[in-house]
Image 1 (cartoon, helix red, strand yellow):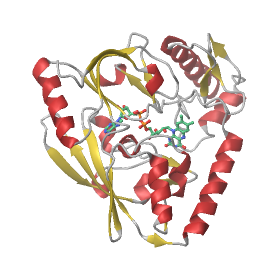
Image 2 (spheres, protein in one colour):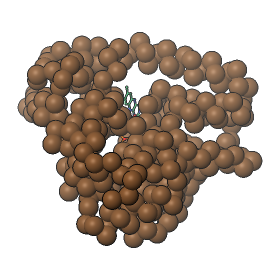
Image 3 (cartoon, helix red, strand yellow):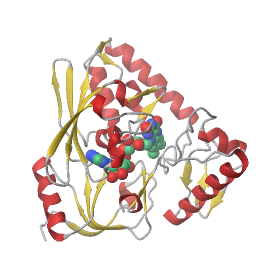
Image 4 (cartoon, helix red, strand yellow):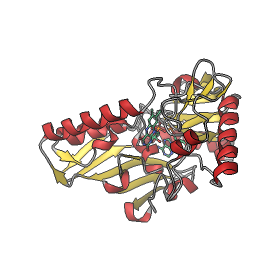
Length: 295
Ligand SMILES: Cc1cc2nc3c(=O)[nH]c(=O)nc-3n(C[C@H](O)[C@H](O)[C@H](O)COP(=O)(O)OP(=O)(O)OC[C@H]3O[C@@H](n4cnc5c(N)ncnc54)[C@H](O)[C@@H]3O)c2cc1C
């Protein structure tokens, strides 16, 4: 077994919810070459392969993940500016991207300042906030396929929509790099002030407990937001064990202690059933279940 691969490693600390069992094997690749080596090893040995960014949009099962998990939060950290184009590695944190664009004097990335994920996972579901999303600044994406080919997509080919993209249909594709357009020059101080205001507004709206995955459900098209529906159904504060619907923002489920994935799933199912029964709306989850969603 290569030294860089750790066995039976806890994954909960690598997620914002702090929930879930261990990874059978865990590795943190340093660069693309490393990623390829690890992918090849997993395929040779028939191991399922999982990707983990900053763990801010996943629920890991209590029994953990079989096979090999690639922890990308510290890998693929490239950030390279070429004129009006910014090439960014998939492991770069979205707030870092926002701050870099601001420092270079380009607006349009401020909404990313409070989203605690990576570029790779962000592109995959077109992360967004405050009426903007990555589709507004994305030019191109490089993806590594399970056949170890590097495939390039123009943003227009990715079918980017509200928390969705073509990439969601291919969970075995690894986003390696994304290219962004630096198109809107603005004074860094003005951009910084806008970011400060957006962050302050988020702080006022969101619960103080950081052990969550942000919004659990997508907002249904054309209707009230998921949080409003859950609130109106009287489910704020509802608990399953240590998992609790936030009293401040009903689309957040908080880990109030030693919550399990089973408890979070039970609470989510109860919310979906209640909203379906009382409002005729089936809430679609935004959070990814692992390993379930890779089956
Ligand atoms: C407090 C809080 C607030 C949030 N607010 C927002 C918000 O305003 N807007 C918003 O859009 N989201 C928000 N989120 C959700 C989350 O931050 C985003 O979805 C983010 O893009 C997830 O990135 P991650 O690196 O943490 O992904 P992870 O949770 O690690 O992974 C999510 C999924 O992406 C896959 N993945 C990870 N890296 C890659 C890669 N390189 N290539 C392919 N697949 C990959 C994983 O396998 C998994 O399926 C919030 C979360 C929290 C905790």
